[in-house]
Amino acid sequence: MPTLAKPIQFLHTALMSFTLSITVICSFIFSSPALAQQSKALDEVRELATWSQEYSAIMDDLFALFDIEQLNVILEHANDLDTNGLESFEQAVKLWSENLDVNIKNIEKRTAKLAEPPKVTFSKKINKANRDTKEQMETVVNSSIESALHLKTAFGRLAKGDDSGVIEILIAQQDAAGIAIQAEIAMINSALVAIPKSNPNRQFQLLILADDKYALSELELTKLSILEISTLEARTPFILEMEKQVETSKSLIAPGLAAIDKTNSALKRGMKFRPSTTKINQDAIDILDTFTESFEIETGITQTKSEAIKHYKLDEPVEEIDLLIEQTDARYFELLERRFALFDQRLAMIANMGK
Figure 1: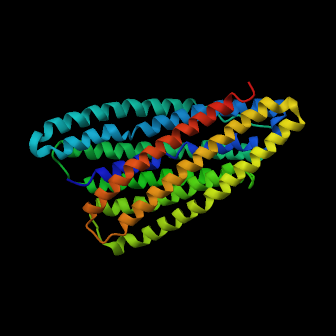
Figure 2: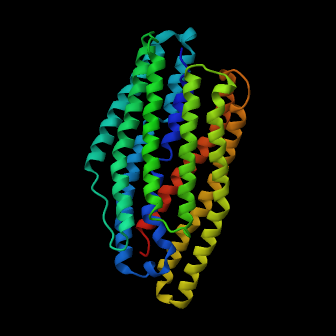
């Protein structure tokens, strides 16, 4: 049977980052005490944050298509074919496929109903970043759904005892995931134009950008795993790019934390000299404090990627390397869940800022 575990784990990993680029549109404004004092700007930001929550909810549903626990149930049945035969595997695939179809229809309906992002009066760059995000969202959604449907097709064939063409289907699945990641890279590059260099969210978005580029290279390693190409020579070009992105990530942590301290100091000075802004500035400080935890999470993610690279560099059969990667993935997934939850928490705080 073709290797299924690795492509499933990769999709779970890749989709974790898709809702993060929208953070730029709401959060960077709070590094400016002057803007925080403007009632109209604050109302616009709240409205934009509310829209972003709906966008994020759609992306949460998209990510749920690749729920690792549900997919692991299928893998367990696939691994027990010699004991239980095809029947239990076929039933697990049928249940998962039916749920997948329902969830895809829900995502498509919610995406179609999502309004255009509200405009703000204080920044044309933010408005452009919003438009670009909405446009790229269609590519992310469509490519991710396509990837899930490829997986459904592969499972369906295997459940009938037919593995013909499954390798090609899984490769197509990975290609669709790559298109979705490239769309997010385009989102982030557009958003970066709107973020002041002094804002900690800039370093955070650059971290997500490095993570996406790392994921594209790991996707290529996943394809090698699916094809059972196990030579270190074949892996090396992608490993080198992954190492480059890990080093980029490491270089962004300290400047990001320094930017948080600098921004917090500016907001506290605003509270001292303009007491009327105390509530708004304190909310902004609380929001910026979430970035401290974000950088702690990203430090952990970077460490797990460094461990994965060590495994990929081993001159061992691909099956043994995949087993080692699964061990690092457990910690990786845990950190990605925390990243995701913190993002949603941040959006909620922005939507209620100053209230």
